[in-house]
Image (cartoon, rainbow, N blue to C red; front, top):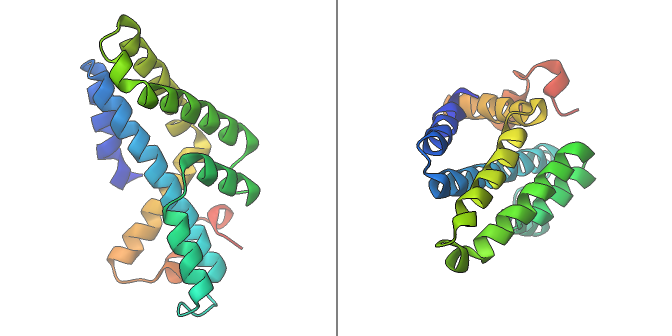
Length: 167
């Protein structure tokens, strides 16, 4: 979580300074990016015994990078990588986020716009402050730390606490 704390602090700082659009946009990108990294990590773990010259695996990995948040959340839930509660919260966040984004130009000048941004932000806080999301951050932080020291992902996984390792 160390790696992500600076970004989380920036998001909180933007919110506290009432830069709601900035907090919303950065939080949205952060959530989606972290979930994509988490899915990518698990895809690698599941396929590490396979050849990376395999065209099907390469195509699936490339498609994973293009997943919408809705598809990504569904994938993570179907793979039992997130709970139903986390999926429901992420879906609620995504729906409100999409409503704000799709109405951005029409809403930006209205009084209710800032309130909508704050509502979406608060749902995002529930997600990022959950134990489940903090566990995801910890897993990715550990993996990145070992990768930075030229350790491969499979080897880095051995340094995760037992309950967070992928079998």
